[in-house]
Image 1 (cartoon, protein in one colour):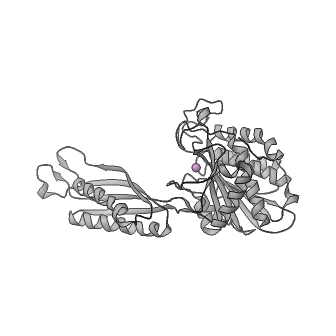
Image 2 (cartoon, rainbow, N blue to C red):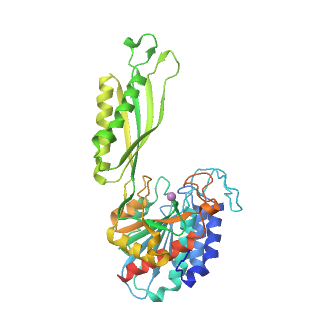
Image 3 (cartoon, protein in one colour):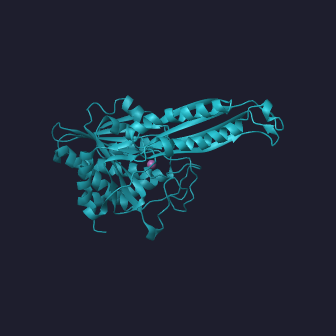
Amino acid sequence: MALALDDDVKALADQMTQDRRDFHMYPELGFEETRTAARIAKALRAAGIDEIQTGVAKTGVVALIRGRIPGKTILLRADIDALPVAERNDVPYRSRNPGVMHACGHDAHAAMLLAVARILHARRADFDGVVKLVFQPAEEGPGGALPMIHEGVLENPHVDAALALHVWNLLPVGQIGLKAGPIMANTDEFSLTIRGRGGHGAMPHLSVDAVTAAAQVVSALQSVVSRQVSPMDSAVLTIGTIHGGERHNVIAHEVTMTGTVRSFSPEVGMALPGMIERIVRGVTSAMSAEYELEYHRVYPATLNDPLATEVVRHAAAKVVGLENVIDAEASMGGEDMAFFLQKVPGCFFFLGSANPAKGLTNPHHHPAFDLDEEALPIGVQVLVQAAMDMLAS
Ligand code: NI
């Protein structure tokens, strides 16, 4: 791999690995990242950074690095939370917190942003403007970006653009994936209760069968994506759970189900709840059943600004070579970086972190997820380069 890494980035590679492994050993769930946040704040102070805010959206940490003279402000964001997954990796840095694991690589994000902080603080005489480092809690849920924005993270100083990366095991280490426009999906969830009238399994005419009604609803809901969303747009509607009935010869009184709804375009995202409710209302009514639908918007689609994406593309090309900067396929996963990018232009991109030769290919959220730590200096170099290019533009 021919990489263009600055000496100060190379010099921090071991530190990044140590930091990442420490975060990995002590993973914490969303809004419980107290140890993680304390360690981040301590490392920032040790690096000589004195403008540090802790307890932002409970467990978030924000730090400012001011360049020579005032100018633009670029926000760099790392999420820091882990998942309720029991780790199955047999590595020295395996999770010490039972049932909790950095199974998405946010440990690497935190470690990389710490390295970026050390580098930019040391180079602060070389740029104008401000770099705002945001260590964000609870990306995996219930979401830390929005409360951070409500607490003013995009002001004082006002943020002009925002960047974030995600280690990505769908790409090999040494590659960067990105695209303008939607890169992560709008993710919603719903719960639906269908109520009939229970009765004897041999006397259906005296009951309203919630199971039959639910079966019709499940089938009809599949026509939302296939018949109502334009074939040029993407959407997913998955019913993940369905529960109903108590006994083989009793007509079920009630069926409950939950599902997830995903899309990319904001217009489709806005229209989907109405399409879903119309079908649920019509089918249950035809079956003499009743329904209760709760629809929750979780994260909007993550939309990359075309100009910011070009800046990152050029920055990445300087580091890994143009042939290793690829047009990423958008993911139907959700990402609350979306909330930052609703407010300010920016780019969320993928840092290749798989390495088949080392057996590091498990997907994100897998109990044996792990990443190639060679990716860390690459991510740091791209973030530093892109931030400097944005400040200078
Ligand atoms: Ni993640």
